[in-house]
Image 1: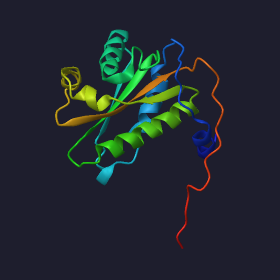
Image 2 (image 1 turned 180 degrees about the vertical axis):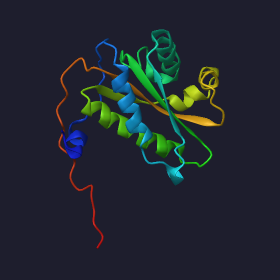
Image 3 (image 1 turned 30 degrees about the vertical axis):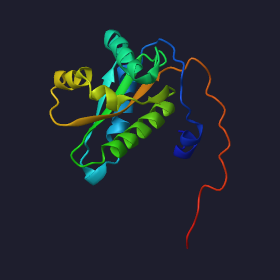
Length: 172
C-alpha cells in the first residue's frame, strides 16, 4: 500500500486520457473518498455527479468550452465527476475543494489520471446546469465547484517538481 504522503507527492494532473471506460467499481471508490471529505459545520453539503454518458459528456464539453475551456476542456476523459455544494452555510467552495482533493488522491491510488477543471459555477448558472439538477431531483441552491476529468492516463506520470523553499513558517 502506498503511503498517503507518497500519493500526495506523486499525484499530477492528467491532460491526456485513453478512451477506455472507467469501471463503475473504481468510480464508486473515488466518489466514496469525495463523500468523506470534511465539510463546513459537518453539513455534508457536497454532491457528486458522475457523467459517463457520451452524449452528455459531449454537451458538457460544449457548455464548459463556452466559458473559456476550449473545444476539449476535459481532455477526452471518458468520465467527468461534477462537484457542487449547497450554498446555505457559505462554505460551498471550500467543501467542494476538499471533495475534489480527496477524489484526486483516490484516483491516483487506483492508477487513474485526473484533472480538476473549473467553470462548474458558470455551468450551474445556466439552464443546462439547472436542468441537470432538476433531472436528478435535487432541490435547493447549489453552486458548481469543479469537475474531475477522470480516466486512464495516455502517458506515464510526469516528473515531480521540487518544492519552492521558504513557504512554511513557525511561530513558537
